[in-house]
Structures are given as structure tokens and as C-alpha cells.
Amino acid sequence: MMKAIVQDVYGSADVLKLRDIARPGPGDGQVLLRVRAAGVDQGVWHLMTGLPYLVRLFGYGLKKPKVPVRGREVAGVVEAVGTGVTRFAAGDEVYGTCDGSFAEYVCAKEDKLARKPVGLSFEEAAAAPISGVTALQAVRDAGQVTVGQKVLILGAGGGVGSYAVQLAKVFGAEVTGVCSTGKVELVRSLGADAVIDYTASDIAGAGKLYDLIIDTAGNRPLSVLRRLLVPKGTLVIVGGEGGGRLTGGFERSLSAPLMSLFSGQKFKGLAAKETHLDLEALASLIESGSVKPAVDKVFPLAEAPAAIQYLRAGQARGKVVVRV
Image 1 (cartoon, rainbow, N blue to C red):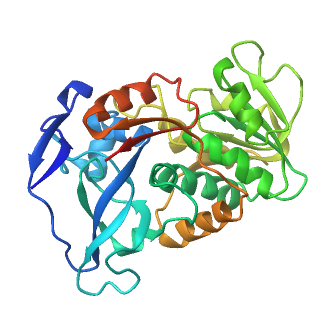
Image 2: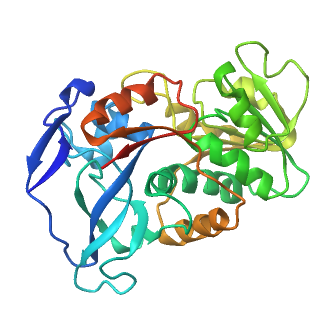
């Protein structure tokens, strides 16, 4: 048996319970991990609440969660491997993604894991898989950032945003981060060339145009953002917040490609792909000192519901992590 954060129905953090459940065993191509830490991202809230309803249509369960244990980012130690696993052995320290990381043990697919970056604690490593890889794909792939470009990052003090600031600098961009007052110093410390406190200044007030905008905040109309782009600029939308119960803020990502048909500007909704290759690329950047996870608070497993509430309140500076 093992302890895990489990839910039987969709709802607020009150539906999450710490329970003793059966410990899993690895299937073909799977790795059994002894979980040491698990990251908390916005996706955890969406899967907990089942909102927007579009999430349920993606295969996570129409009436109740298909996977009852919450958590997706993970860092831990390999306990055992299933048939066909060749990249890992018992005792290896790894990080990556899976379903159900708010637990003492979890099974993950081999191709969703990489070796934990050298020098990182398990808590720091657990803060990287989803947010870090998403930011990497936004900056490198969707944004195709090049040296000297001007990049605006909305939500720069959050999970994805904190990585995006650092990665854009790695690729040689001039970075402006947008965040709330309490996150200004964090964003500066991550290397942003300029920081806009949106509670005190209008992001369009300076009249500056950008080659790339990465929007992780999810609530500004596309018509507003496009006016901040150069004529051939690119907008990358990461996730979606706000909006109605059906699609939430994801309708912006869905409509973005249509806008590109009628403009020289490019509008892209990012659907991040979880791969061990990008986890390895991110690990290399972390080990080189170019990127560092920004961890705000660490909660014990029993307080995972409070960790989700803290993240959802929007005050987290960087990442929130659950220690197991």
C-alpha cells in the first residue's frame, strides 16, 4: 500500500483526500518511481475540477476523473522497471511527467522521463518537466527566437513564464517580462531586460513593438496583443485561463490559426508535447547554469490541496511543489 492524493469526483480542492491505496506495478515500457517531489501546474487544477468541460472531452473522464490520483510533474528514484525498458535501472534519479504523481509511488512511461539534472534537489527537478518543457517549445519551436529579437512575455513570474524569460535570454533575445507587483524582483532576477508591472502600467503604454509575444497569462484579447507585434511578428499562446465553463480561455488558442490566415503576423496556440528529448535538452541547460527552476513554496503531500489553492490564487512566484 501507499499514500496518495485521490479524488472520486470533480470539484474544488475539498474533493482531494489523502488515502492509502494499492501500490502500482510497472507494465511494459513503464518505470516504477519512488516519488520524492511533484510539481503543481495549472493543469492539475483543470483535471481536479474538470473545467473547462473541454478537458473532459480530451479523454480525462466525462463524469469523474479517469485517473483518480492527481499530479503530473514528478521527480524521484527508479524502484523497478517493466519489460522493454532500456534507459533506466533501479536506483536512477529521474524527472519527467506521468499521471498520479501526488503519491508515494507512481508508474511513468519510459519516454516521458529523463535523468534528473545534476545539482538539482528533487523539489527543484519536480518544478521543471511540464513548465520548463512548455517554455522551451514556446520559445525555441513555436517562437523560433533569434539573436537580437525583442520578446514580450506575459505571466513572466509564473511557472511557464519564469522559464520562458530565461530561455529567451539563452537564445539571445531582448526580453521584457510582464507580471504583478509581487513578482517584479523575481522576473528581474531571471534576467529580464525590462519588467512591466501590469497593475501600475499599461503594457502598450511605451509604444514598443515586439518580434515575439509569449502569452502565459491567458486573458488578453488577441486584438489587443496583435497591436503590440511588428508586422511579421509572432504571438504564441500557452494554455488558457478565464472564459466560460465550456472552453475556458482555450478559445484564443483555437481561433489563433484562423487569424493568421488574414495577417502577415503569426498567431499560434501551443499544445506542448512531453518528450524525453526535450527533458534532456532542458536538463543540459540547467546543468550549464543557463536556466534555474524558480521554486516559491514547497508543501508536504498531505497539504497538496492547499498547494493547488495557493497556485490558483495567482500569487506564486515561479513554481509550487509538493514534497513526498
